[in-house]
Image (cartoon, rainbow, N blue to C red; front, side, top):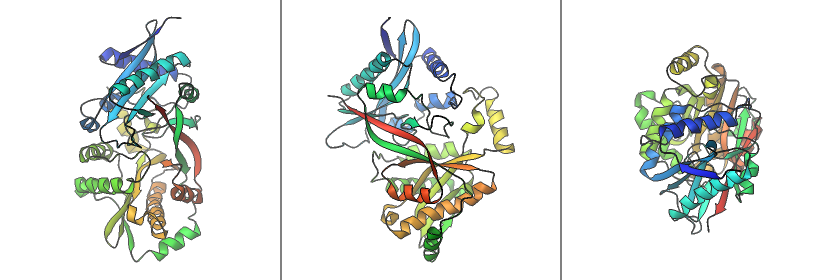
Amino acid sequence: MSPVIVSAVDHRRDWEDLWGLSRKLYADDPAWVEPLRAERKTLWSDENPWFEHAHGQLFLARRAGQVVGSISAQVDRLQPLEQGRRVGYFGQFECTNEAEVASVLFETASQWLREQGCTWMRGPYDLGINQSCGLLVSGYDTPPMILMGHARPYYRELLEGAGLVREMDLLAYRVAPDFVAPAAMRRLLERSRRRLSFRPLNMDSYGQEVELLRELFNDAWADNWGFVPLTRAEFAHTGREIRRILNPDHACVAEIDGQAAGFLIALPNINELIRDLGGRLFPTGWIRLLWRLKRRGASTARVPLMGVSRKHQRGPLGAAISFGMIDNVRHALHRDGIRHVEMSWILETNQGMNSLIHAMGGDLYKRYRMYGRALD
């Protein structure tokens, strides 16, 4: 067979080839939703503030002139050393079902990361831990939610065949917002009423609210596996992106004695509304999307952002904050026609949150996996 040739994505034609690869690989997959092209390209543009503290390269693999795979390699200067290891990332992995192609792609990413001084490779990441990440390893039969990924079932075999090993599973639960609240949670919430209160986002002071949420997020997630803090510029960028689709009633800030102690944001599942757009918002895609959002909305939603400040995480008060935020938002979601909410991703090691979601009748319906490999 012809050799596999890998080259950097540098030209407009390369982007067209990348999009064409995805359409070819998922042509017979009814669960796949083609990502919006504008968003995929913006992810790698100078407009993305992630690149203020990181850099990376996207690659395409070709055989006999035909695109057969893609991969990216990236380094984040905010990523702390782990046991003396400098961790680099891989992502954007798409591949035909050929072990040779996958091997060449991973060796290309590995070599690029070695040249940056990395000794461990981890992924897949869209770019970093605070974007879409993890390889789908179960739950292939349902479409991905907003800001979540999809994959062919054979990708797992390709990664493991290339020497990558499991590091952490990220869990996605499906919850009906009209669930019957567990009696233990109701009692716990009632006992906390004197100190604990909840409010929606104040859209009139949106910039200040976004900065408050960033501080809460960085504090809440600081001890979690793989954590990298979000900068002001990154979270402000995220705030601008989600404002167009954010309903303040679908967001909640928890306060203890008047001080912010946690937050939750649910977003409409845009993937439900763009499945027939073919990844294009122009020339008419934007009009169709906005009309659908206004006239019928989405029937599903996702909670991509949630956190409880570290000093309140453990013990009954932390559980009351988490359940109280969910309880406040779920009623508005149900009122607005949301039938199912995805809570993701949840670390497999987060026993408290996993137990709470199970108690609410949550269905563990998708599992994403983070892989790693030594680069020595």
